[in-house]
Image (tube, rainbow, N blue to C red; front, side):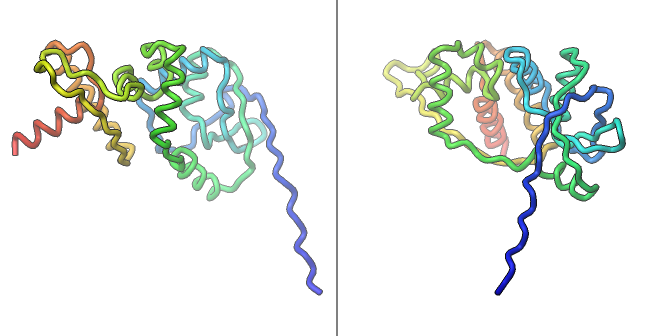
Length: 216
């Protein structure tokens, strides 16, 4: 008769308040967050007073190493907090490296229709300009996602068909993301300098691709 394996006790998760000066960054953290995203994180925390606890591991009796939450800590310091909430994981160096390699990158992908329905619901009570301050999408992208179609641009021919939008998804490296965002930012500045009231990232990307094709 076989003996069943003894069950391991469930891990206990406890949230602690730790002084910000006792929290140290992980030297191998490779995650980079654009300034605009940091601003949105700050607006959300200021608006609600809530934030996900940082994940840390103990280094000694007083110091902790951050595994997840480097940018939240940056924002919380800017907001003047002396202590922040953390969850402590007592793990090895190797497990810490695995955590750093996965916590910021292993995420699901939004169902496009559900994401659109969610944003539409929020847009019913929150102006798009205010909503763009706290969600990843900018105001122009929110307008595109919350409308089935968008009217043809000013100056189009009478009777011109409305423009239908398509959401494209692709993955790039962290450094590639920085390069792409900088390129889109410069293109948006050029387009708006020519008289456009707004320019979404998608419009800027379309402009860049069209210029590349025309040049080759």
